[in-house]
Amino acid sequence: MEVGAVQVHRCSLPQLPLDRTIPRHVLAHRRGAISFSSGSSLFEGLPRLERRGGISYDRNDIDAQYVRMLGDIGIRKNLDKLRKANRLRSMARLPQLPSSTLMNDTDTSATINDTTVDNYSGRRRYRNSMFLRRSSIGTKFNDNKNYLNRSKHTHLPTLVLDTEYPGLAQMLLDNVDEWEFDTIKLDLLTSGHPLFNLAMHLFQKHNLITTLDLDVLKLMRLCRLIEESYHRRNSFHNSTHAADVTQAIHCYLLEAKIADSLTEIEIFYALLAALLHDIDHPGVNQNFLIATSHFLPKIFGVISVLENHHCRAAIALLRESGVIEHLLSSQRQFIENQIVALIMSTDMARQQEYLSKFKLLVDNDTFDISNHDHKTLMLQIALKCADISNPCRSWQLCARWSKRVTTEFFDQGHKEKELGIQISPLFDDTKHTTADIQVGFYHYVARPLFSCWSDFLHTPLCDMMLENMNDNLAKWDKVVKSEKN
Image 1 (cartoon, rainbow, N blue to C red):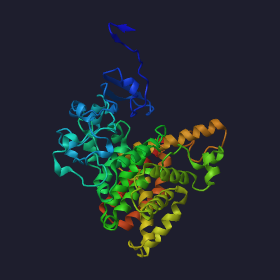
Image 2 (cartoon, rainbow, N blue to C red):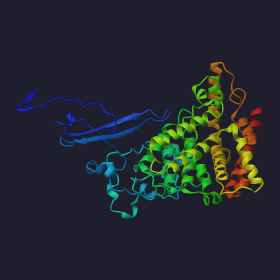
Image 3 (spheres, one colour):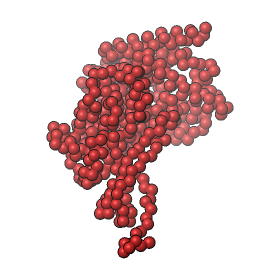
Image 4 (cartoon, rainbow, N blue to C red):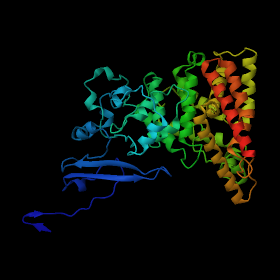
């Protein structure tokens, strides 16, 4: 229709996915801004998370983009500047900020206890930090040249925590070297993203981004892909477990006997193997897949079915992310082969195979850290210990993880009962309890493995682990006796 001499065209805004250029015909006769908010159903059983953002444009802004907004008020105030920033490939090098810059003015020496988390959980949930793909969040920090990283790749702050909140997640990550680190608590404080935040923190802490010249955006994408490939519906084999295993192997990598012998590439693939070791786990074991004629045994056979699947998925994500594509072909192949070797060692059915080889070297004092095969075996045992490290944590952590793993066992038992197939050993909740399963696991699986690991390292951490395991076993024995009475 016409209003005076001005012709007005009606044009409805299309619904577009995030990070897509807005069509020219939409911009031609419109000016202003749009804000939006959408819920996320990615995390079953948890409060819905919000993703907020906006569009800002005028009639001449042909390259207007959806902008994902962070919680930092200072960043929001600079959106006009951010919108005009160069595209990502032409951005200036961005700073890597120390943890103190990314937090509120909170005493990092403060401890986080259950009361703190309970009080915190009643407030608004911590929101995700979204990637800014078409704008630079580093503009306001460019004056501080001490923070600039001279790598040819783009470097962003590894952890950008929403400053509307007390920075509890960063306070927790500052204690990542401690054996009593609580990844379940980290899961709460990061709104379901413990793996992403822990992984980026550790890659930065080990200085791998700089020494291996990693593109941090590709690394962030890899960590995001890994976390999304775990299933939150699983009570135990989920991203929180993967984060817990990664934190445990990080503690082992700090042990002097190991730390002094590893290169940056070896630390890198050890952490990656921990992050990836149970990727795309279906929440059931190999026996269930075979009994139900699942397609995975048809592809990989009936030996180490899940571990073969984890390896395939791990290498696929690693290649898709392109995070190591700048390395030499021989280096890329070496990293992939080592990740596969470490993940394959997590098959519980093959524990005795790996443990007997390692124990023979330790008992005969023939272990040679300069020998590649010996070093690989050491890292395989380290990952195996990290994978089942829960019995060696404090009772508070141990009991919670034990409940999670037996819940997953019993869920499979219920499925087997419904399908009319034989219930797997220990998976029938009418015959077994968490306590009696744990007692057997300690005696036949955990104690032999950790005793050998302690004989190898002889460190205070190993002493603490064995002490925790013995204390926890005594508690489970008491629970079993009380259940029988």
